[in-house]
Image 1 (cartoon, rainbow, N blue to C red):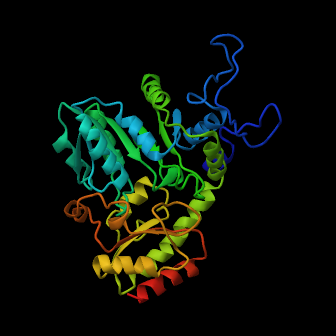
Image 2: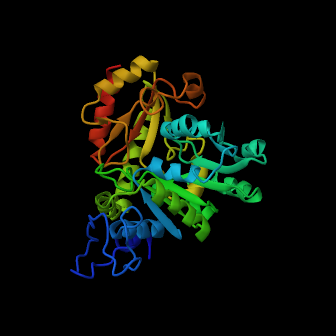
Image 3: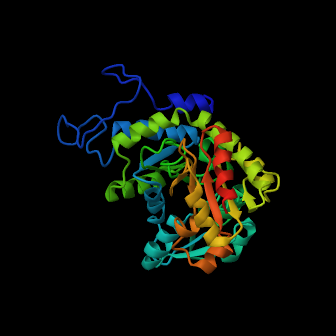
Length: 381
């Protein structure tokens, strides 16, 4: 099946007891056993749930993966991967990383003696300078949040395989419609499915997918089951519904994003626009090679630093000030004061996250209305 067909049908079999076309919400904590240990594949909802399993089959199909596990959030999915490591192990990751991932790596796992190298991944060959006998994982985010840089995941995969390292990719900004990292030799992929996969801002969830060997899958599943960071039946139901329109939504998101980026490039108050669909973006060519589009995310830097950034955020009208992304609405974020506020300023500036940087998740409203709102806010600076 092609992608759009899988988004609607994969894992979604009519309910055998009623014929319901949508997988029901199996809102139960436990399941009846005919005798001790004998059941119909479900014993306790922390382990498995039919609604969640239908969702996992669908997402695995979209990513052309063998397995998928759905978590309570994207951070829960990343947490499960890092928990495969041991004290003394080392991770190589990007220096332009989602603030939540950075905080978890430095505030939680570094205390457990796992070392992280935050490096420039614009040239994947830079990874080789940090590999040693303790290195176990390369963790990549592409496109990056919020500067929209691209990492060459095929080059990363080659290095990882040559050194017997696990390679994971955070694919949240692209969604499986735009980018499917597993075909480049990646071991596992994470989504904050709260974002584009859900698409409507109605729930929080995360996904881990991969062409995992059964032993590796069982390890991750075991961690999920023991820790309990599972996607609830209701969240799974919402996500199942949202995924059905993913192809349509992503096309409209990126159509609007390109037009907005072209407008911003010409505005005198804007210093720089980070959108992969612009030929001026340094990673435009690589994005064309490893993605099937340019997603609905962009960022831009305005004149005037922190004061201008805060003034702009106060001036927007129907575009929404929020810390999330990937919904039907156009969402605007000031990373320096929100998602990356815990990243030391000197380090943040090295990553290109300036005080005047604005991140936008471009929604599906009429593009003239989106541009009009951004223009009136910029004109007030």
